[in-house]
Image 1 (cartoon, rainbow, N blue to C red):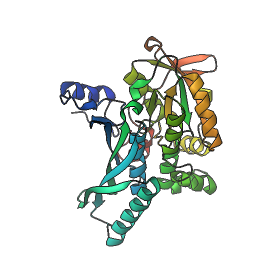
Image 2 (spheres, one colour):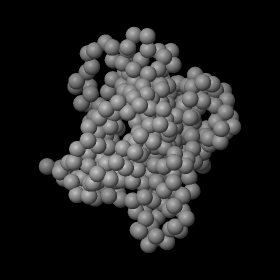
Image 3 (cartoon, rainbow, N blue to C red):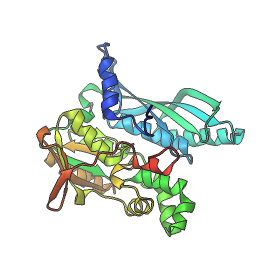
Image 4 (cartoon, one colour):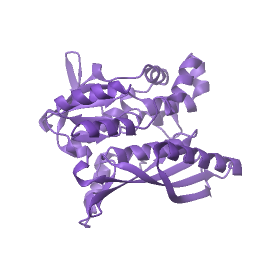
Length: 340
């Protein structure tokens, strides 16, 4: 018997499961589909948006990670994240009252920052864990005429990326592998800066989502998480039935992320990338949004175009055009037991 690798289930296998069990409730506007960040339910005068995501890699400030990545998945629907439920699974060894108190304090602080209300969840000491796992569920709402989906990308759209990659990946590497990085000759100042990526520039994409949706009709948005930017681009293309032509030179790889990935042998294109926002919109609107984000000191760049599906998802590097890499699992899993 062969076993599956650590990380997301392969997109083809997952979609096959969804296809075998179709949603029959007519109030489900967007159900389980590969590449779509959150479900959308018709509540009459507006849509309820719901998502769930676990944090399994990061052990430091895990509650903050969980809140932000779940809020992002709701925000990229054009929705306002409002209500959060957290399932906290704590290891039997090393969990104390102080540990739990710190987790809840961190979660409460993060909720206050994003104006989100903690409405429930579950907490338990769980046998067999060597680290805390947080599974979050975020709910939000959006006016029906403001809904955005991953599958909304249109041929001719500009593809825009904010901030750069891999913000979350660099933070995880720095927080989890500091002794190894120091032994490899990475300067402590680089490691410390990468550790702070959790808050600066941060994992939240809510500010840029709000600005983009206020100023333009955004056709699609997506949150690059596991599998990194490359996987997110494939998911956008698959969800919309289009191709993408991406200019490698236009992709911002943050210097600390590039250095840490290079040191440990990871490809930044396939490394978990929360903190960046991927969106497609008409080229004229893209110019307006990029300019507005710049005024708010949010870096963003045009990185490519949406093209017909027949052209595939390609990466242009100088005069060379090649297929966008496909990552069967996130590059970050290589650093942990059970990774590739």
